[in-house]
Length: 334
Image (cartoon, rainbow, N blue to C red; front, top):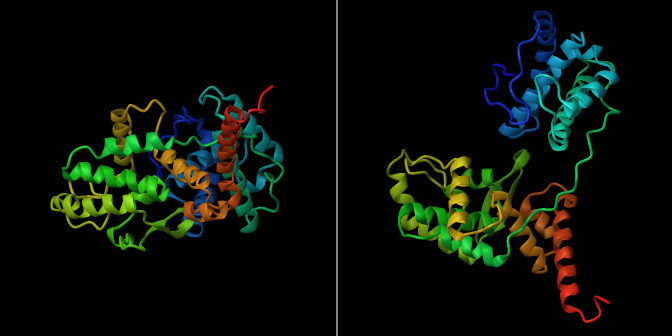
């Protein structure tokens, strides 16, 4: 399935087969309304590009399903259409495998947002999706690395003294030292980093929200070494891009390249646990809480809009406390 606005396929929603000509004409009546909603999300809500791409795929598939049901505009959609679409996502069909609960929940969220927007803009007289709830997701606790594993990982990234080794060590120290998302790290500019003794890093997060995160000593030393002995050599190959982290051609480091740097360091460190940039973000939060940080302080450092999101990390620390108690207290077990 494709359209002119997006050429990237979703892993959960492979390309659909050919539509019947009549269905395609009906879908074309809904697609302009979907484009209006996506424009609203892009301009007014400042959603990330990847999120917009996912919503576009989900809603294009929704338009096709409505067209197959004979629906030619959002004003004709009834609650039964939305419920049927949700069931279809979970069950799959001849052209699409069943979606996971997480992917189906994202798709339903996109549909609910579309209908709320259509009602608010006067395109429809009611919201047929208001009573439809996404599937319940299993609660997955974030996985944090033990501090010893983090140290092994950082040491593995910093082997060597060339520009790329200095960059790699600085990048991983940055991710663990600030709790930054990978997009925030690669989007950081040199001018966003203050390496003075009371300095901080400016991170630009989701929804256009920015935050300042203090700079720790290990992060300061790693970034200073990279800025002095590594980045100038990389920048010489490019056109003076302001990004903090550069690739070998002097351009901004991509998210994919940052992932590869982390993966190679994890392999060199011999870590058995799968490690992603989010693993370092989880480790940042968990280690702060283990060290006594207040959950609302961690919320601010992570850039979470709600403290509820941050509180899932407290469950991890409680589990750790239970393990220590069970292993150490003389009356913990009968």
